Image (cartoon, rainbow, N blue to C red; front, side, top):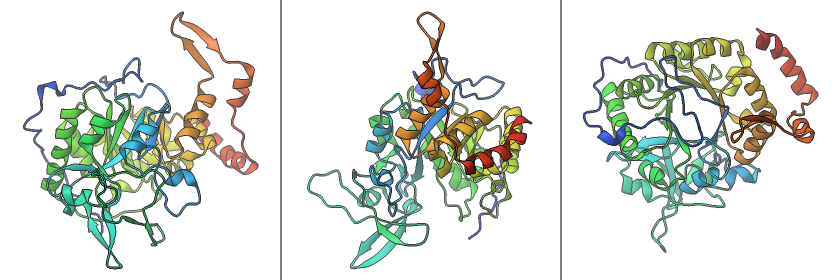
Length: 382
């Protein structure tokens, strides 16, 4: 089913918001806070965000790193927190009994009597959702959990460090409080959602966020254009980013089909930024300047963000942050490549790193990569 645009009209704000919910978007990771002034939302430094925590799971991959920690789990989030990350990104859906849970796929796949079946996450109750995979109760065995790969194969969801699925509330309670949350509001790309449904889902999620976020930084993002506009109308405390493939995939809703359309949506809806597939940025680097001129923040996601050279190019282009799977490797690379100079906070003097560190900060490019980057230089200069 093609995604159909559902236009936004006037939306009421949340009926009840706790008085304690005046949460500023700042943390110890941001000494000067995040600028939410009238001139626009501003991320103060190049930001690294852990994709689904310590990285997504690709179960048919030969790379062990893609199968170490269960994605979107408390352990994965807290493992990511051991590195100099600013945020972890994860997907939130709402069960049929109104509990926001953290799970990426639209469907849960399991096996019964030798037959694979699937159930939509949003059509399960919380208890039903938690029956799949590892269980909290010692000695109790959960229902099997499978996943469909991009090429259509069904594989068992086996990782080295597995644990039960979790709710959004549990994440706020159990994840290292210094770590910010990039909450992706997850909807099916090929379903039509009416406004009442979107409103109900978003209010349910916001209620948990306002009750439990406390001092934790939070960013909302979503591929669903109307959900992005709605969550912005429902609250003004947390920034809202529009997720886009940047034209690398096409959808019925034209607002999803290019960076130009994403920019237009953000400006019309008062959103704070765009999260683009990195390939969309590299194919259309000229749009970066337009986004910056519009005082919008720009982050990226995608497999290329696991390549240090690609991350370094984005830093040079003025992109403000990257969502990555290889948390250790990319955080180390960012520190080496970008933090060539630091301020000595105690004396206010500039500290220059030694020659060995400066040399290490220069990424090594192959001839193929150099050829690609050279083609970008005219656009970057402009």
